[in-house]
Image 1 (cartoon, rainbow, N blue to C red):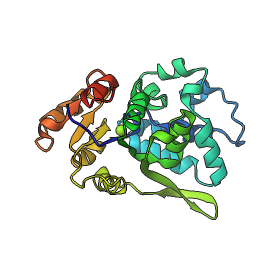
Image 2 (tube, helix red, strand yellow; image 1 turned 180 degrees about the horizontal axis):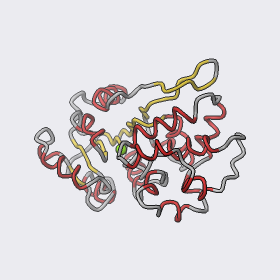
Image 3 (cartoon, helix red, strand yellow; image 1 turned 45 degrees about the vertical axis):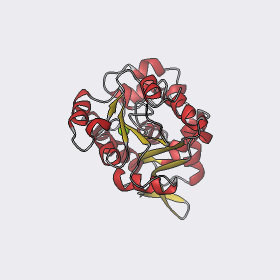
Image 4 (tube, protein in one colour; image 1 turned 90 degrees about the horizontal axis):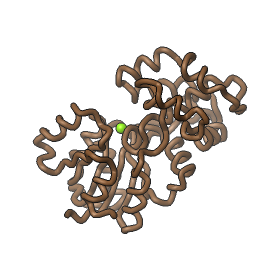
Length: 261
Ligand SMILES: [Mg+2]
């Protein structure tokens, strides 16, 4: 059983099923009188969402869709408003959680409830003295709000993700810190004083966007919820050799594999 040094995870699609950017930004967009959040979720999310973004999302360009939502919805908000949103609005808190997440295809895209076992795994890694981190193309503001909401703030040593860009105290767009996950992973290895060859480092991901990060670590891990085609591609990727691990039964598989129980 390999002795690992660090446990790094992707966020959207890996640690949580969907994209909180979609959920959050959508709710801002729908709410003309900010910050009164008395929404009738079902009607708004089911029938009034921006068609372009949903088309992108359902076309599996979810990252683009999330960014489009943020680009349209967050511009003009103040830091305080962004902070408020990033800490208050999660689908798992909605009384309609079950109903909304059961919407075919779309339900999963805005499900922000941590995947069962994902939080326990990072907590175990941290308690056992491993270095821990999140590497995401999503937005740091929302990740911070979400892990605080779930009591996980102290379990992550580093969070490398994109940020909103501000001018005169208001959001003007996206401040990109992660162009792709290869160079971003190098930065994490350096920030956490890990070996530059990624030895002893686990990176858990779910999609093609994680592959550049997989190349930089010794132990690429594909979550159970990843698409079957993606799992096949990773199994057959000569760059990964026998190092890639497909966690077929979920996070308990990951904990067992890397002795995190
Ligand atoms: Mg992902």
